[in-house]
Image (cartoon, rainbow, N blue to C red; front, side, top):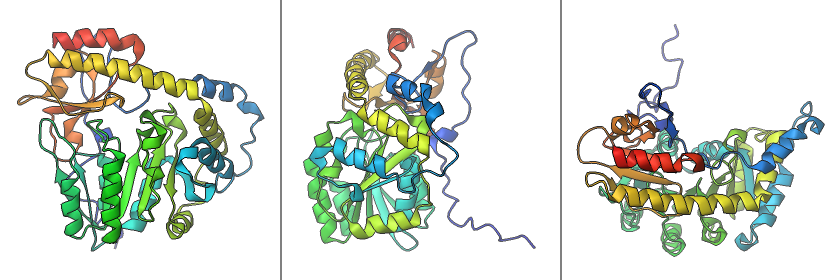
Length: 366
């Protein structure tokens, strides 16, 4: 009687998100250095602690603003170089919530999407869950250098969407804006959407965002989880100059997608320029030291990366690099959690400032 009541047709991808990776065991008595999920290594911003101290004055009995109008206006004002208005911005339940709805609008059964692989796994999975086909542009190990040429070929083959991590996850590279612009213009001629997933975008300069591109086929997705240090509030937003897409996204998205307190915290994080600049300075310094340490390991290679971005991809030719790091008390995101990688590779996030020197010593000793 119940057979076939679940519509699971598109769930059998054979790939799990990296958050679902199997449990890793660490040596007893060793403090684990967290280099796994892409949170800000500086921890929660002081500005958010201040908001929370006064949160008793916020009424959580009433429903929130359905469209988070104050937050949308704050985003538009905060990024004057983007030259966007609040109606170009859609706030939602984390950038992941935004991505889910965008994929539902932009692709579906009988269509195909392309992106550099490996890339943010859960984004690809959400695309596959719509019934669309994924045509990955596979990057060459161990450098995994980004080149627009593969995506240009995907355009010629009829892709409906180019899904691009910018900065790239897991390597931390940044496809230059001029190259993205050229690619997006070609995509527009082909009737193809370009989705720039800028989850780590706050580590770039504001003027490097795809949100600057005044093209109807470009949509930019942003998060408060990384550079803004607020992964727990689950607020994200999309920027599009396409009025039809903006209207459709608002229609598709459930009401009250951003909670009252979440939106207030997001506004506070947006205004905390000191925290963001400190995060940028620390990541730049720490990542340079980490790469210098990795260079001394003859059997470990770092993929091409941008020093400003707090993630990097390490690989070795044989063996389990996840296990090797775990033996040193270092957590990571296993390569197995990404398409086209296995556990010979790992994604590392820059550790917190108090743990940096210990991290470098453990890398040297592994």
